[in-house]
Length: 123
Image (cartoon, rainbow, N blue to C red; front, side):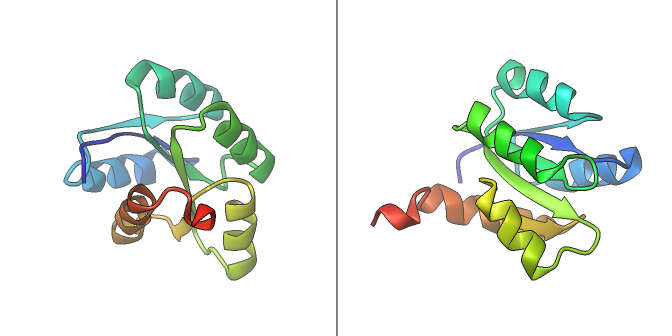
């Protein structure tokens, strides 16, 4: 996988920091944002190609707007207890996956899968 720059937006600063530390093993650089406004500024500034967005910080409409505004940036949503309905709603909003907070393996797998075939329905 090519090196990627990542922005994490989470409601809880400690969980965001913990996730950032774990993700540094997989991505070129990882930054933490405390709000969706910070994410919107960080993506172009850092040329981030991945945003990990906590659904306790952002609504699905904010995720949808982020995906539309930054269409070359993949979005993975996270939540403490994601369920199937939340996962489907996140994907419908434009995210590439919805994982449990701290699920580093799930986030990395989603990005790898997406980068191999970013438009699976176009086949």
